[in-house]
Image (cartoon, rainbow, N blue to C red):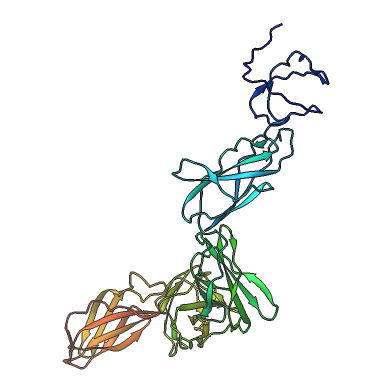
Length: 455
């Protein structure tokens, strides 16, 4: 048998009535032997024991889990951890919490005494500095190995949801809209504000309704109000950590316009048309109701029909082309000026207009000829115009150039020929215009100068 060698420096005599040895040093190895004693003296000792290492009958606990940062403020940090998997055979009586500032080499106590639970409130830290933390579990054998260090944490003012916005006001009140403005919160909670929640409340119902977002700035245009109703508004600030308490307007507002709608436009007339459209023109109203005119609303209706929008949006000028009309239908038109209060009174309707191809004056008659001249007059003839303008030629007007050099009508006829009376010896030139539904067309080329005399 191999017996380990242990160097024995000194044998100590212990006279004990019971087998309990005190005063041993932890970590040292000891051997023991026993001798009996009676009145005759001490007998020979027995054989020594094998070397025994002096240590507790249990071990130090394992390391706790890595500490987790639960809360940070400008002067403290709260951390927590979980107990070790093994307590070394002895109940854990507490934890030693240590800290190390960025740039330091040594770990120092973070609390004045060990803590009893798996969490710690650490004070006395320097604002703006970075720290890491570790924990040792303690049992009857003493402190165990330290945990892994926590993440590096900057000690700064605690980040929270923002404070409430300040001074919520309502401007630009209209019958169906208004503008809500506010001042940012005094504190954003240490995290940038990402937006705002704006709510409106109809006082008649008391129900708060969120205004559609997202809302990033310090104002929002609120739509869909009901004219005549009373409304309150409130605003909350939002950051990634939450939503602030709302700030409410001091007084309710009444949804109504501070101005009237415009007067009716005047002089509405059709200035041009074709087989599927018309061009309308009008004059602005005498009064804009105290608010600038934004545009004009044009409506149309057929015989026995109802008024409907002739164009999808507002017309910004005082002229509009109305397309997509049905050929052969009679249509009326009317116009209203629009400001922020909505459309005003409509103009008088135009006379019913038959949608058709445009009728223009006929072109000039062709080849006007002097067939005969006498002392009593002259006989003229001509050919029909090349174009009737879209409407049958119903007649002709013969014009004479007088001594003053001005042209004046002297004869009307339905045929392409006519006898024009003259005074004997009178000198004159003649020209001819064709007439259709649109009126007189452009004149023909004039005849040569004619003298009333027998030839």
